[in-house]
Amino acid sequence: MAKQLWKPGNMVYPLPAVMVSVADTEGRPNIITLAWVGTVCTNPPMVSISVRPERYSYPILKETGEFVINLTTKNLTFATDYCGVKSGRDVDKFKEMQLTALPAEHIKAPLIAESPVNIECRVRQVLELGSHHMFLADVLAVHVDEEYMDAGGKFHLEQAEPIVYSHGAYLATGELLGTFGYSIKKKK
Ligand SMILES: Cc1cc2nc3c(=O)[nH]c(=O)nc-3n(C[C@H](O)[C@H](O)[C@H](O)COP(=O)(O)O)c2cc1C
Image 1 (cartoon, rainbow, N blue to C red):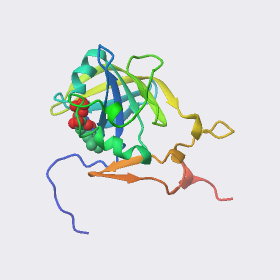
Image 2 (tube, rainbow, N blue to C red; image 1 turned 180 degrees about the vertical axis):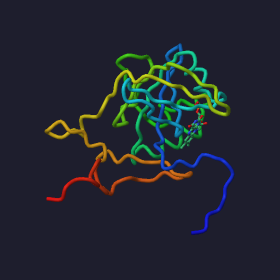
Image 3 (cartoon, rainbow, N blue to C red; image 1 turned 135 degrees about the vertical axis):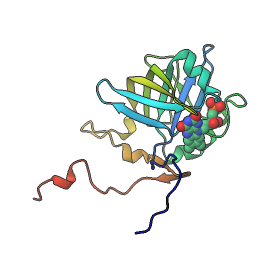
């Protein structure tokens, strides 16, 4: 098994590519696509996003301390990429991508209606790491689309066809390979 030795870099893939929505102090919304995103704590529920200070969204995040993580799907792939290559300095990404801004429950940043899961977050701490600054945030609320709820109240995220971002590529998910703990389940 021959391995190539690469210089240090980021190679934890696949990752989610999420659309993070923000609103500036005047209420103008924007969307920034992020892949440097993580779940960092279950209780209290906390997440992290890492953003370069040169992004248009960065001072908005810094000033308001609020954002929404919107999960992305096959239908949202084009918009996900667009919101990751165009800047809110130049375009209204909600308008250009015909996305619908919905009011959040606790914060002024809007939800993206077309996303199946919207996670409202409030920044607790900013870690100035280097190229990226990490916003550590509390999850204030989670909105899930009823379309993917079954009669028993179970949420089927897989039916929304979530996508992943892997080493520069957007990929579909879909094949069920197992469920949590299946490796140690007793065979019937
Ligand atoms: C798939 C993907 C993932 C990205 N991940 C990040 C990220 O984690 N952090 C970041 O600062 N920029 C990331 N970007 C780049 C920003 O989304 C991009 O610079 C965007 O145009 C910034 O928007 P804004 O200027 O409106 O804030 C990513 C772009 C793409 C396409």
